[in-house]
Image (tube, rainbow, N blue to C red; front, side, top):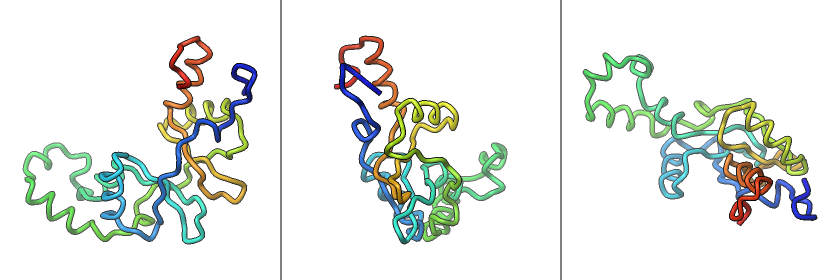
Amino acid sequence: MIVDGKEIKIADVMRPPQLIQETQTLKDALTFMIENKCNSLTVVDDAGVYAGRVSAVDIIKEVLPDYMEDDMVAARFANLDLLKQDAARAKDKLIKDFMMTDIPAIDVDDSLVEAAVLAAKQGFGRITVVDADKKPVGFLTRTEIKRVIGHFLDIPSALT
């Protein structure tokens, strides 16, 4: 993509990857998210290859008992002591056992237009960027794509 005579590539606008291994625990993922103020992490296998994603919603769902996830009546009878017990029960679960898989990634050499199409298609706010070996090298959010579009609409601060 050409912006002001300069080709803008995914690598120019992507953020550094926020990685966690699939063999780490729910508590490890939650600790990283809290300390880094994020809601989603890219998951890699032991070889560093992209394996999926774990989000704050995935963690919440894993902590809540299955019967309670969609049952507001059951939730009314629960209390924080039950949530504390459920959290303690789930803290050592491995990320690979509850992470999202089959989430498409984009190659670092693909175009920003392809990234925009993928963002619109998958509906997630975060797209993992991988290299030729399928190892994560960064991620794009709607913000980066939004800024490129904003630049085309002459919004002065869009790419700053």
